[in-house]
Image 1 (cartoon, one colour):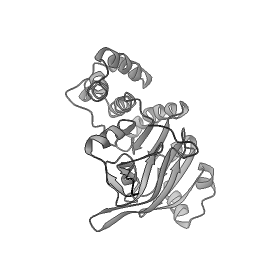
Image 2 (tube, helix red, strand yellow; image 1 turned 30 degrees about the vertical axis):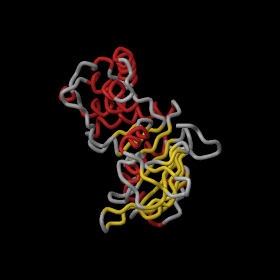
Image 3 (cartoon, helix red, strand yellow; image 1 turned 60 degrees about the vertical axis):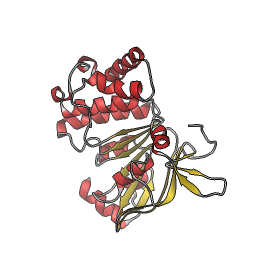
Image 4 (cartoon, one colour; image 1 turned 45 degrees about the horizontal axis):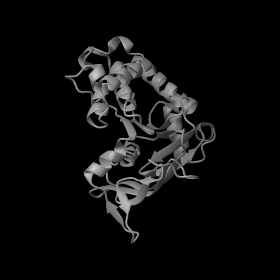
Length: 259
């Protein structure tokens, strides 16, 4: 994607999303700057995960717009100013520059950690297998799994599987990483190893949007915190703004229960 000067890296403008009669996102507007870590907090059902899925067009929006690095996601604007939906192939090309890590690891059970990581670069980006394997080994070492490259998902702990999933997303050399509650399916003692990898990724300058219930991570690692409830952004700002000086009674009530 070609960079656009003086624009936020992710621009979400007045986005609405319906599931039949359920109005899940109600005019969400926010920005994420290049190199920023944005933590999205809120109770279950507040629209956090849906918003993330709309960013890489896993869900279609009914109103508003989302742009990543100046590129409108899921649509193109015609000469007449109207928006036209992209084809599945065009949307897949847009998604290639966005990595996503889900709650469930979604690894191929019949493939080793190494082959899970090389699959997309080889099949989608047509990277030579030897080069993809070299890079995959580097990434697995980066997430602390150099000694697990030949293990299958069933032979790995949940935390190890999630770290493979992160390496798999990074193998596509994304410009933006989306994390949808990446630690919620893990046993408590395994959460730290995944958050540590994410913290290292943040330090490297990766632009990240993270839906999380890990308040310590949001406070310590995020540059920008967004609190959502019932499909709207109730409050956003720096971690100190939101955690130490929340303005909304709803934010105060939520933090009082989770901290």
